[in-house]
Length: 79
Image 1 (cartoon, rainbow, N blue to C red):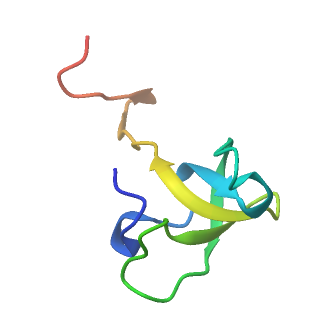
Image 2: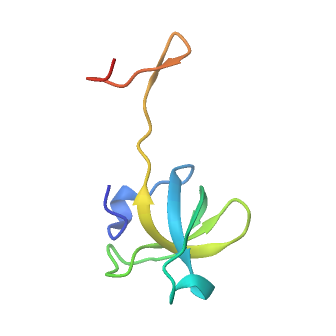
Image 3: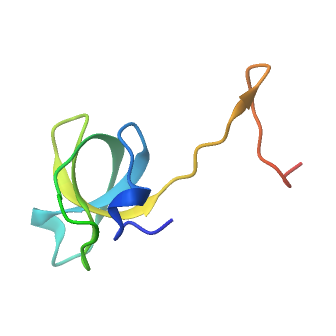
């Protein structure tokens, strides 16, 4: 999913971000979104978020959330 559009980034989503210190290398850090810091609808380098562990970075990848049915993750089309 596109990390450049604010509408795609939700609190509680699992994401990969580039931290400010890692911008040169592009190293990704995985975490859970605690707060969305970018106020505009989009940003070409990614929406800025604060992760639950306090780190701040720009979203590069958003992991999908699958609904649970009877306690099991349901991934339509996957067996």
